[in-house]
Amino acid sequence: MANVNDKENKGIYIINRGTDKAWDYWSDLKMGHGKLIPSAEIIPHMIAGIKFTGEVLAKYQVRSIGFSGHSLGGSIAQIQSIRFFDYKKGLSLAPTKCFEPFGTKSEVDPSFGFRFKNKYYYSDINLWKGFRSQVCNVGIDWKCNSWQELSDRLIHKYQRNAKFIANNIKNFIRQGDIIAELSAQIGDSIKLATNINNNYYNYIPQQTSGLIAVPQFLFELLRRLTIHKIGWYRYNAYAENGDLIPNQIDKKNLKIFKLSANYKDIQSFREAFKDDN
Image 1 (cartoon, rainbow, N blue to C red):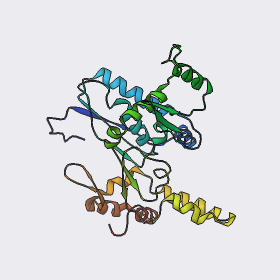
Image 2 (image 1 turned 30 degrees about the vertical axis):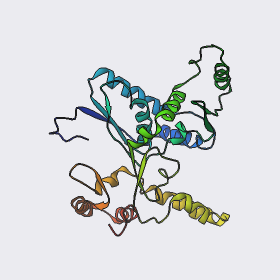
Image 3 (image 1 turned 135 degrees about the horizontal axis):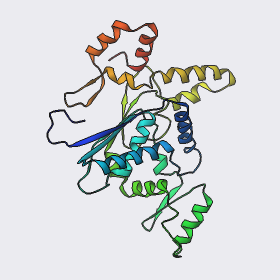
Image 4 (image 1 turned 180 degrees about the horizontal axis):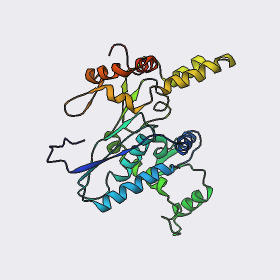
């Protein structure tokens, strides 16, 4: 974000909130199912984020726009970056900053996809849409753009500009965070050290060799959710230009934290930040 005295940057950042209500958790599950089923579906929250951004750009004369968010909000920010990175002439895209997002790479880079003669082909569970696309592919002029939904247009835009888009996105991920480590991210991922020594994918096969491991598996899930909070970033250190300094703590805010923290708060803090910090 630009400093208040910065006279050169004339833009805005759209900050998307994370999972908060029951409907949001349902959206998290829908994103999760996209990792298991070959579907190019995007969730309503992402559509709303794109629509809101379009309305802002239509109403205001913005030179630069950026996106950010935590958890589900970070997922929305990744998709917004794809949609608006080349929106119109004279509008530049500021760096996208995501905090522990649910990675959205599979939404725009399907597992079952390949490129052939400058075209990108991918699988989808919508058979009618697939039929219409193939009819157009063989050269029959049958409203060939009508089968493409927003999710399809995002896929094609990402496939044409993947490197440029990824270079503009930075994801901050705490080691062991179950949400951020569940799926592949778009962009560069910066790991922040915690007192959880492995990621969740490594933990599962270590602990689920038998039914007796199930209770511990559930306790570990709750433990890892304690570090999945935007509030912990209050205690990370930042440079004068606003950049987060990995694995350093803001000592001033830490002193304030100690004044009111109870035992549970302190235990959670020790999970979120490596002892060496």
